[in-house]
Length: 447
Image 1 (cartoon, rainbow, N blue to C red):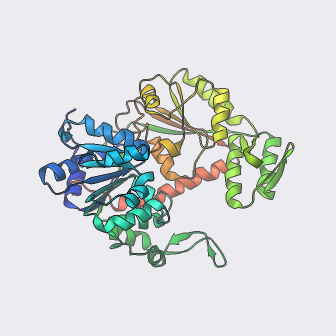
Image 2 (cartoon, helix red, strand yellow):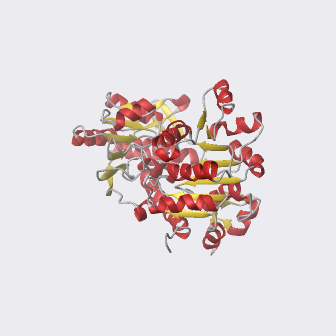
Image 3 (cartoon, one colour):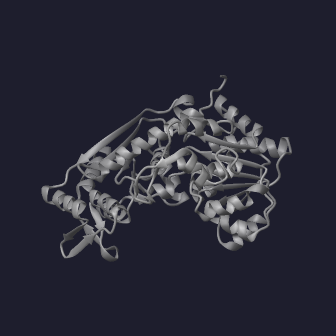
């Protein structure tokens, strides 16, 4: 296929060429992959400026999106790639195969660093936000080899999904601490103050006054940000809340557990040892069931299943993409709707996009990044919510993106008076913080 880049895509590719260290904070659907591949083609085959490139991505994006985009566009001919996935023997064979690009899933980064001589001069980290914790093995592995890399390209649509503290590990892998400091403790002390705490134990931090602007200013020279609504004719999006109400008996059970952190459900005693466990169990109860001892599923109500049944009936065969969070949610949905099909494999994705899956089930953590599902439908149903703004936005962007020909409707089934309402409010508040970051480094093409 012939590539006719939008102005913003040409601008972003040029930014990569001009900045050996850079981060493209491109909104979902703006084509981060083809922009990056176009720049890599020039660097490798026109400028002869780079040799071996390591592309790190979520597994499904590594195995599906990058190879597909590479074979899709005519102008990328000659930019060879080797897919470093599978068992150990398959990965080793892929690393020994001559190519310009070596595409690996992020779970194997530590294995690569520990077992092979590092000879990559360029690294692309797709979904840079997956390196937001400096405690993970993948971050520690990349930190070890970062001084050996000449070019680093970070790609993300959600740079700080939960907190500006998430930015430090991401930026460190780009500039090795030049802008935000070499140590996260120094970054934290400089820009944050304790927020929630219990005497000496600090549970969270909040930015100091003026810290946000200062952080944005420090990283703005290597980061560009673009929102899809600024550069694309995005389809209309309608967000809808469908409230369900528990019976008085069900609500009393929920409220008693919320207050006492212990409650009797039939012959089983349900307890929560701390606030974190309580939060998870309250969300499960809002969905209709909760795990007891030894992962026994304790049913509470079927209000969300009834609401989902109404949506399926109203859709009248129109495809629905249903997002679930807990395994017992999946089991109960499939029991009610035997025709429902999980989106797990490339075959599932192809069948969905071909319109052969009227009711699809998807988990945000396994399918949030990089998948193009807009051809198969335009309606998402959030059966159970997640605290992760990143996963929430990424999954919505599977349908609400460039190429979608219909209005996208996103239904949220919310159990009234429960933790569901808290999660929706938290997601909205985090989005305000991230929107500030995006706006601060937004690229002004031609300005």
